[in-house]
Image 1 (cartoon, rainbow, N blue to C red):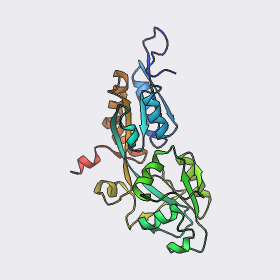
Image 2: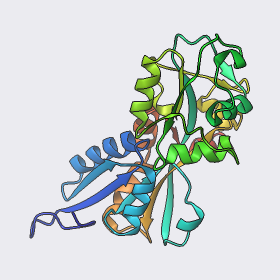
Image 3: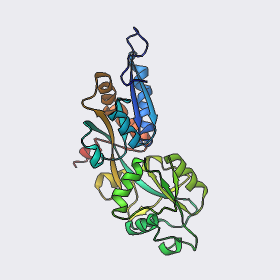
Image 4: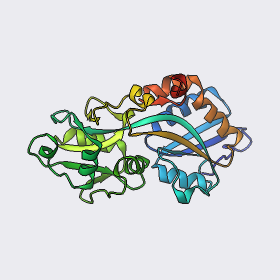
Length: 262
């Protein structure tokens, strides 16, 4: 497929190709379906393959919009990408509901994911080995977690590495003493989000700035967006999507902090 192609020759239809973050997939897909149904002339084609892949795809012209759950890296700042923030998110550290541990300090989280802490008894839990679950290196969630939590420390190479948010949640929900991290928008009753430094991950905590593991979710375009891409982006930023789809997906509207006077 060619980004921004005209679809059927002579039909007057156009396509907007959106690719990247699996975190942003629920917003991009549902908004894309709504936009396609309401605008007879434009189809939105959405895929999730990871933030890094989305940034690469929009940079080389194979996508019109690259979605990302992380900021641009230093080497990506000269790619000519235009950033449109579309939502706020928190990254939740998750455990199995049967795990008695309810919270960790940020230092304990860092120690667990670096491999310095290997048993739950070291953080007030039972004498059981920690089953460490991580994301792959293409993940924007991993990149954001590394920046906000790990600092200069490296991830433990012994962790199970999975390509998607859903896979991390599924493993943690099935393995009693596993631990992973996912977007707050993907936390379900199958897992439990831990408090960090005594603060539960929530919209109120993100808006107030008291929950530190939070980020902005992005749409990137190569230069200013085309007319068709601009129409879709504006739709995603509209109250119709922000106040419904974004919230239903568990994320925070991009205007939420402004509404709270921040």
